[in-house]
Length: 345
Image (cartoon, rainbow, N blue to C red; front, side, top):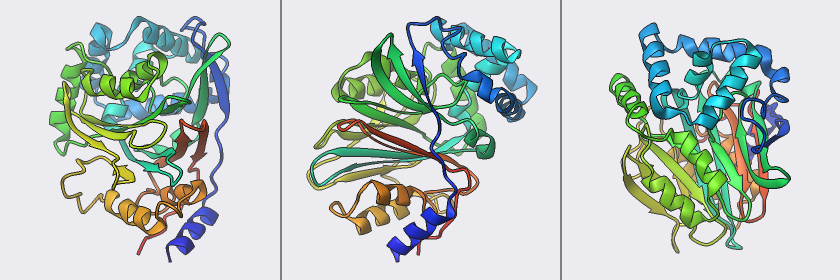
């Protein structure tokens, strides 16, 4: 039954591979992305307009001014300036886009150890306005001059890292840690912008650009003060180098590692040691599918199939699926342009 569902899901989806661009980190922040923007100008303006509709005027004012105080580095400010100038929109409109991940996303991330000991890392990104975002998914290979550094799946004018891999080192994804009190969470996240904390996805970008090993990444991502509670999912090269770091704003609340008896980890948007909410339980079905497929029977196509199966896949919310393996350098993304919704019985 499971294999039939996966096959049906794959046939029903009109998915596509996003374009790949290169960004040179040695180029001025104001211009290093300019070769990407022309293909996305129209949809970018639509996304910015829709994103601003998620916030009232007071929230926009508070976020924009909080961002100016600390949250953004000089380099990120330069990237925002470049995007705003190209699109002929305000700096604040692009700046607020950098904060929306902490407010609106949903995700499923899985790390598994293959029978040959190599680690594979997959993720679905779910977002409130998925149809527009699907039109602007891109893979970016980051360089310093001619030196390749890492690959990330992202969007034009968004400068954090949500999903990425540094071959020979580690891969990362970030899942929001839901707070059922959205108003209280917003206030706390806003305070995080002005108390010398790192943006969740900008911490990932810093890790990708400055660190060289899985251990370094785990240490940094478990200790850096961040704006909002989150889950950092980090895969290394082999063995037990897989972890879900459950983050509070100042410290790590929990570490969940691969071990000799646990060959995979599944994280969505809720603490893994607690019962999953009945109205949004993606973790338990994913765990059942992983066990059914089994360590020896799981390969990249069937792993993609798992991410294309309801409820891991959310028809109106899933933007893309990325599968990556830092040990082999494998990196592949599918945009869920016409995501199917197949029920797992």
